[in-house]
Image: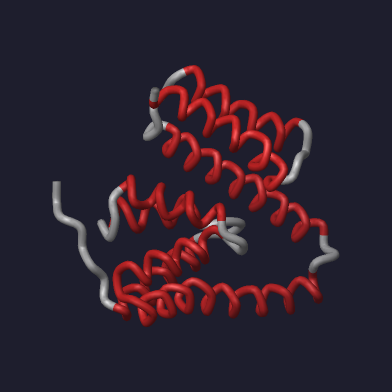
Length: 180
């Protein structure tokens, strides 16, 4: 296995810029592939750790991940570079697209294109979830917690915070029982 690479501040900026400009509707799958597989800036376990922490913090998961990763590798300058790289390009794209949508958004072809992009983004997110699921131990309790959370969010329409407050303690209790 090749050792991990420590990026420079400039590489953090350009790396996260490339990630951000590669995705529509969510860049977590692209971020994982880029940081873990292509650039080897971190391993799978550290990616899952940072993503898990990022999901618990307020704000967008990917921004939280960029801040924590940049800070771990290059301190405050690294955190700022990663976030700036993540946000600058998409901001320019969004401002341009907003202007175009204002003018052409009523056209049926534009509305169909937007629907297609949303479906593709959902597919990418599911694919990343499946890849990450293979890292966790597979036992009945783990599967049960995952299915409960998915049913609560997708089936019942519960907000994430409510699901975390209900399913989270249950998962912690089950994990504590396994430790004994």
